[in-house]
Image 1 (cartoon, rainbow, N blue to C red):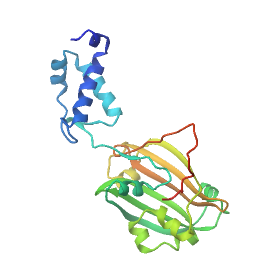
Image 2: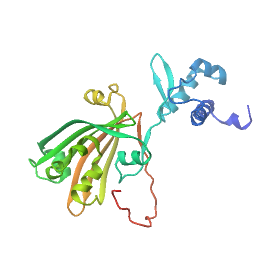
Image 3: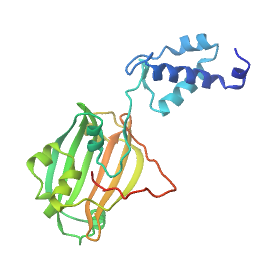
Image 4: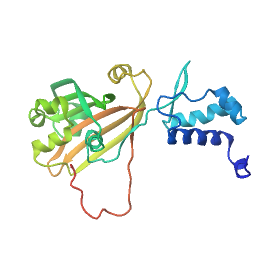
Length: 251
């Protein structure tokens, strides 16, 4: 052991080793991580310390555990970084195939939180759209969109079944939003959501609740997206300096 290594916690040395194996591709998504007993012997540490290192990698989304089977390298999470792009637009820009599956589309009367977030009187007719979301054939998440009726009724069948809503709403209105309000939360999937997301009850999910505004008109869409926690993450970069040019909003 090098002298400098003696100051590094033993669980971190193992964690660093496994992270490097994953980064270089020596361990690929779906590969089994060596058994705890083997890692404990290889690094001359206790199995409790091995579990500590693995737990940190599970928390980071690099490793997944399956009861009775062991630990495996996780599929990399898809990153959403451009807030004024839809998730699908960003994935398409990276060369990925995106798709939707329509679960339900209906006309209802806005009540409570929905009416408040769309800034309409309670009882106002609106359109509700529910869809599963896919990237390269993998189920990523589930969305519920609440739209003013004049927007919902103007959607084409292709937009309803196959397209992200950002460009569709831009087509209908002739312009994009000037701002977006986001609320982010982590949770665990409930029974009815687990069926839609094809995962187990209690699995982690990432929730994005958002409102699109076109000022001075006000809100043009309120919605909630529920993503599988093992397949999605959001990355946001902040700067203390204003951008050199005003973004065009919906690209």
